[in-house]
Image 1 (cartoon, helix red, strand yellow):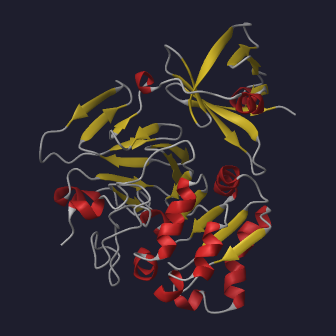
Image 2: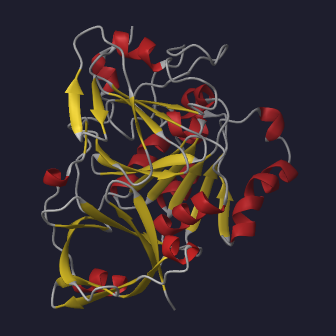
Image 3: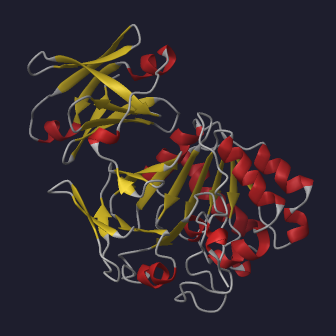
Amino acid sequence: MLSLSLLSFAQAQQADDKTGNLLVMGGDCTNAYFLTQFSGLAGGLESKLIIIPSAMEDKLLATDNDLERIKKPFLDFGFKDITILHTRSREMANGDALNDLVLNADAVWITGGRQWRLAKTYLGTRLVNSLQSIYMAGKTIAGTSAGASIMGSLLVRGDSVDHTVMIGDYPKGFGLIKSIAIDQHHLARNRQFDMFEIKRKFPDLLGIGIEENTGIVYSNGRFKVVGKGYVSIYDGSRWSAERDTIYHLPPGVEQFYLLEANLEYDTDRQKVIFPEDRQEAPAHGELLQSLEGVYQQLEGLEYGTDIRITVRTEGEQLLFEQSWNGAIYPVHRDHDHTFFRPHANAVFYFEQNKFGSIDRFHYYQHGSTTWEKLD
């Protein structure tokens, strides 16, 4: 029987400044957008990359050509140092050879397939501990489809016979994110009501469903939505974006809500992050200097309007200067590359390009705009 203590497989995880990022994707994500996200988080194309394809069928992993086919999108994108890590042997998953590969990697990508195959081989072995170790040391782990679900503590659709069974014969994930169940291919496969089967058994568990070509970037108890689609939230409440209000649901009421790109969620408190939840965090000079430059609004160019913001530093303060009215105002760091304007619902998410350098930011205030750094 699955217990709530099992669901807290990663409960001992402690947040600190070194903790890395988890890029959790809903499927159909091996494309330029998500490879850019992955490369930026990993530190650029020179990073050492491990691909774990063990969720796939054996017939797709039988030959060297099969493994080269898995590598090809990453090689075509520009990654140079790629190693495929695959075994069905738990003894090998406990051995030095595979674990040394993981511990020396800068980033890991776990492919799609069937998530129970990952659990069968790796759960309870040193390899999962090694994944946890590199994440806690500041490295990046990405997972798409089955590779997304395995990151949770309860393994959604972890049944070796029927993938429509929500809690199957492999009910436990790697627990890289604590007390969470992650479903994928969500709206595309009309799965949005399936998570209620899990919530009825474990009402305190956070459930999320990630749509195709959509993902979350998770670190230190919070995540941001990225990509083209939506992330569905099952936390016993209903958030109204229009009213900016959280409604707590009475027992037995089954509802979920959707988060679009650039919205953030606090997994520890199980709530959408509001402006009043943001707190100023230290920002060292090297980080601030990497953000400096002139940024042009891409959406404005579509209408023939060249709108720009100059980002500069004065001491340890980041300043924004608007081209259209000359206004200058400070913005404060919240976490990572996320900054906010005090006393306003204005958030700025700086992103790294495939080479690991800052090249744009997304501005969110009841909707998003994208600003690209000029050369």
